Amino acid sequence: MSWPDWSWKMPRSWPTLSVMLDDLGNPPAAVLARSFGVSVGTVKRWMRDDRAPRAVQLAVYWLTSWGRQEVHAEAEQAARLHAALYEALRRENLALSARIEYLEKVGDFGSVNAPYFVQPRLKVWR
Image (cartoon, rainbow, N blue to C red):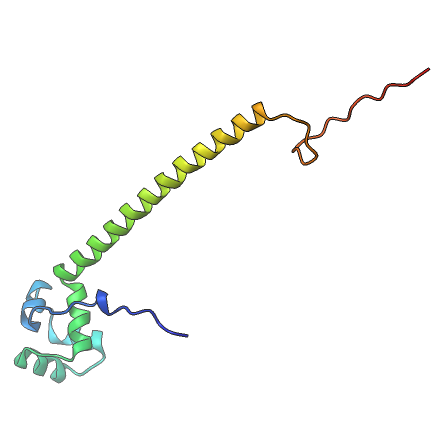
């Protein structure tokens, strides 16, 4: 089984760790350590070096206003796409329903596969 390529959804670049943490309101090192399952010393080292592992930087990025804006933009685009698809299918359904109604009115030829059957009255010869 092959997995879809999601790499196009990943940000190619992001702000430095200090800028992203500033955008989040500078959470304490203890909160970040608990969130990422590392020691407070590790988080303080990341903050001092202004660098963290890629996975941590990506996780922090999606929490910032920039990451939320990307998610919001994609959700809005998907909603617009699905609304347009719904409208196109609704119009097609109406057109096909109108066509069926017209054909039912015009085409009552008593065919074998008609959706209804009226049994003819038999004439009795005397």
